[in-house]
Image 1 (spheres, rainbow, N blue to C red):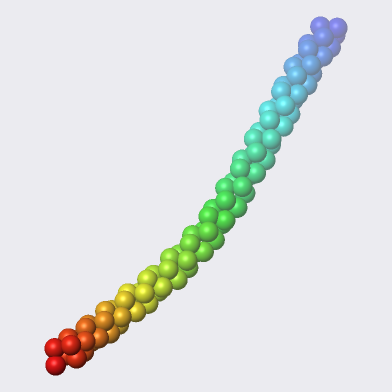
Image 2 (cartoon, rainbow, N blue to C red; image 1 turned 30 degrees about the vertical axis):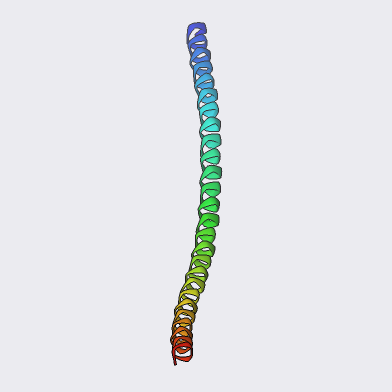
Amino acid sequence: YANEEQAFRKKEEQIRSRDMQLQHQLIKFNKFLQDNEGKRRRAEMRAGEESNQIKIKEGEIDDIERELEESRRMHRELQHEVGKSSRSATVVVGG
């Protein structure tokens, strides 16, 4: 009977030891999952911020392109006016 009790206690100690190991592994795995979740949230936040910045920059590009087109249009008009003025001056001087 004593041998059976000793074997039972030994088996019980092995089970407790294994249970402690499993608990430790579970804690480590849970921390791993929490760390990964934090990294994922931070990456999503960065991606959202980058997406917003892209939209802002695209809007700025559109504004600058419109300004550039307006400047080119004004430049063409001014060149046309200068051309007309030059022809008028030539006619007045030459005439």
